[in-house]
Image 1: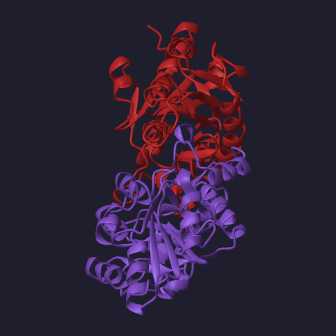
Image 2: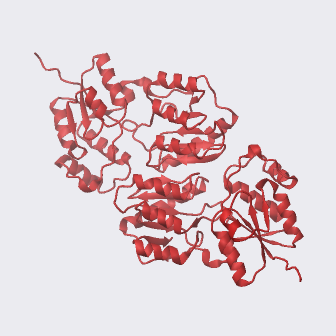
Image 3: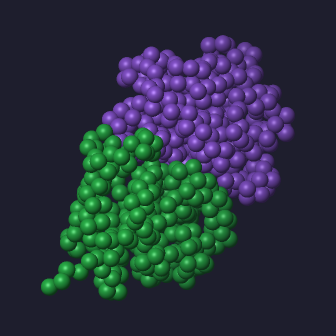
Length: 272
Length: 272
């Protein structure tokens, strides 16, 4: 029996995008190998046996493995928990990377984007999830059957500017705004926690809009903002009126499920 | 017995500054009348019998009362909960004010500063708490016996810029930052809640700095940011390294108590 050489390496952290990528590869008959970052993506690990599990501090091993398989295309995707740099004993490849970073690591962004640059120097092509599945990107316009009202529309315009400002300063990607008042700004706590908080802060029974944008400096191939069914469930639980997300920039996981949930609950979803 | 005419009207919301103002008036023998905004300042109400309790929607009554007492100087201070505008039945004076605001009310700032402007047009002098008690303003420099370390200092410089940016967009006054990463940004939830959240997000055992600044557009007479013993207790509970606040702009309530608590717990406090 001839061993098949996988053509795409999926380096996976947390979240559901890796599931879609694996399924897409299976459906399209595209060969792949699945590399999971140690301590992440437990369910993925259980569902699809990973070909390789690698610690963030031992990326050199993953590189060696991928090279041996003659793979050029890598998609690196999913949330990665910021490692405490104190207890890391890196392998040589990672040590060189860290030396180059020269303690400039701050947000998750910079870890992953430095890793991306280093992988490119090794001759790899770093692909984005939407290169594999273009339908993941949020389209433009009103996506479900409900529309933002006049106040929501004002909040969307105003909130979009604020979210971009917050993003361009590398603080976070999303905010909740109600009648001109910013209720919550996401920093390190994650979108879902921020939405939960906004429930306690809003005034209208059904008010407030979640705005989510991409940070201008974000490496779009590895770190696009994502919404999924859990996001819209949180939005519903918090009593918000709807969601406005940056079209062509944000990934929507399980698009049909998200839209039908929004339609059922009376929430609007806008690609802006 | 001759009735004494109070010379200073203290219009009080929540918080401890009104206590200090009343005590200062008593100590200095300055005549005052205490007006409490309905639904606020319960402890104050219990400790010092208010001369007048007024609903935010019936400010006209308070104006009439203050004018009758021949008072020109007003200090308006303390947190005021953002009223739901839906259930308000304003008196004539307040109705005119609201008409002028023309539904432009967004943050707490705009309610109070519009009220201030309206009171000035009526001929009142709106004083700031520090006009009555100058020692409330945060001085410059290291205020206790502990100093920020090198990383803290970087975070203070970087965080100050971010906090000012967040403030200048009317989002909030404070952030928590650790090793260059913004852990939390305050919007409508208040400083204490934001500090609590940062405890779950920080990486170092004793890391992260609370930065608090004044918003550039804030009316300093009625709405200066404040820190007090509860702030520094929260900072300690959250395991942060210290506090950096804008000198000459932020009020420190119970200065000696705050500094001695910080000294006992090993926290730094810097006026920046």
